[in-house]
Image 1: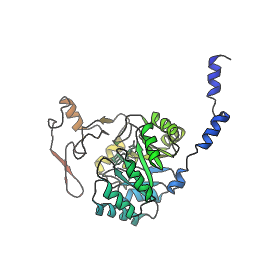
Image 2: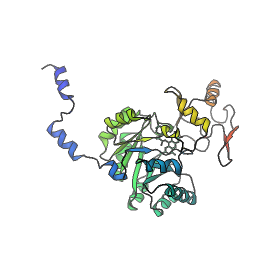
Image 3: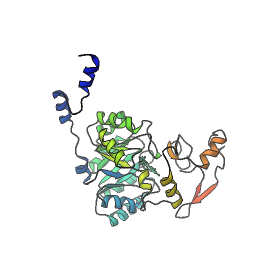
Image 4: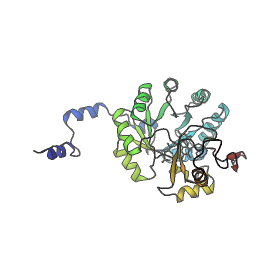
Amino acid sequence: MDRSDAGRRDFRPGRLSRKNHRRRQMRMAPDLRRVLGIEIPILSSPLGGASGPELVAAVSNAGGYGVIPLWGDPADKVRDGIRRTRELTNRNFAVNLNMSLDYREALQTCIEERVHAVSFFWGHDAGAIATAKEADLVVLSSVGSAAEARMAQEAGADIIVAQGYEAGGHVWGQVSTMALIPAVSDAVDVPILAAGGIADGRGMAAAMMLGAAGVWVGTRFLASHEAEMHETFRARVIAATETDTEWHAELYDGHWPKAPHRTLKNPTSEAWRDAGRPPPGDRPGENEVIGTRPGGAEILRYEC
Ligand SMILES: Cc1cc2nc3c(=O)[nH]c(=O)nc-3n(C[C@H](O)[C@H](O)[C@H](O)COP(=O)(O)O)c2cc1C
């Protein structure tokens, strides 16, 4: 047998050596659907400013699992977000908290309200995971590498969210979803959710072939009626093609500096590029008011 034949035999689908088969059996991850109490392994990811109680409840009611971002809010607003979601669904959902901000009061509120799960993103804090586990909450931990996934599993996370570089919004890691999911899948024994660039059944099937137990879908849900979105933005998301996004290390840094993000290309980023990519303080139109939020608060250019 020459070398090419040997290679072909090793890669024949469906054939595992007895040793590998035993190893795979020993490492069987807990079933994602059982851990979350769901029928369909699709989660609507937290979308700051866009996924409120309506979207989260609609996804959970449909048999998936909604995740509501309630970070940066005082305890009474966190409690209100949880209760408003509960008015719309009696199914499970998770609360998303940002590890780069002080999350302790919000986590305590989640524990008091006995939410089903918390989702931690933007950093690793073993203490937060331990606190949530002691209170019997399911813990989802977002990571951008296999090493971070191992740390989260060791700290007690029940589910790993592996977020690839394709992801919309703030992007923690720099590894593509295609490369990240198999690496994380080899690194941990808990169920993995694939995030980044998944928008339909084809993407979901591909992610599951790579080792994910389910998917964590963001941008696709921005297009849904239940998302709290301005119609112009919704239309732009729907019309966008695969070449219409761009990644920036810190362009939209108002409110949250030094947090890389993927956005749609737009006149603000074009003007900034045309001006030679100046640093914060020297950017075109800085501090200009470009709109208002539903409550009336002004939105400044470069705010995220
Ligand atoms: C508008 C928007 C807001 C987001 N806000 C959050 C957030 O508050 N918390 C979080 O963990 N992830 C946030 N993300 C990231 C998503 O949870 C998810 O990882 C990402 O959308 C997955 O990639 P996809 O958009 O290609 O589906 C946001 C994404 C978008 C598009």
